[in-house]
Image (tube, rainbow, N blue to C red):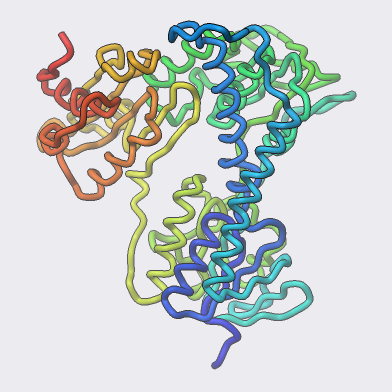
Length: 459
């Protein structure tokens, strides 16, 4: 049977548009269906705009500490962020990148349909009143903010999600953030540096529970030093008139703020696809897939946040490439055990692989190496020595099981370990690779040497 397209991708985020471009480069006839904005959440209301605002907030902080670097003549007390200009810059950055994606789609001769898609059968969707047939489909519909139904909302509240928080035209004097995961902590850092009094309420004992506890503990200590208040193991019950009510240690507590940010996570966005009707199986709201991104319907794949495996933009992009490879007869599987993750605090956090606790839970015999940034020359030059590099190594074979960094430029350096783990390099091969001086990256081989008691710049 002849179909309109070889591959149709539903969703134009970092997973969908990358899959569409890869398919086009494989010579396939490709259709890309996007109901809202090319670039998806990442480009429009997630990764890119968040980091744009964080850049300004961090620059403001640097200006206020310029005297520590011998710079005079600046009235640090008068320095502030003009939110109108900052929002204009955010809009420009987003527009530039979205425009670039549009150019790539057009340049690769991909048919773009701007509409919602709904399955009619395994080879047909309806989008914008038109039926589109395709040999294969790749679902890449992303995720949406989770608004917990177990938290009662009463009265008049200035309630924000991560989307609304990016659009603020004025900095609230105080903010209560419900959720101490990556989103909540990044916004806590941002708003704190812009001048808000920030309180974070987290149900679990540690912030950023996916991060190694030692590293997240160091980050929490630094954030508290910056003025952020944390209420750990706080069970939020309701929000009424901008007051958050919660239980802590068996006692009823509350905190009032000018704005309340709900940051308890995201959930797959799969509503409206009519996917169940054609036999696609789900795990909760996530579409179930195998290691090759195939759903229960043989010609339909699912990538990115919609499959609920790892909700990161770079994972979605890689899954998109893997799905197209599989469709083209070049089977490839995802390796979720070595996905790098980055958190844009100041200093930054970057991690890959197992945490120390996870490695022990698996019953592995491990060696753990640590190198504090206080012993790194470039960190001292940068004026920030609070960080650490922590590595987890298999005790018998030297296999790299995980690395967790907290320090300047951490997010730019974790790729070294991503390549090393993909190439199945050992700790010795990292140690034997020359790292340039002076760089923060020198701390990486030092941490691996520390795992064997051989660190040079550590007593």
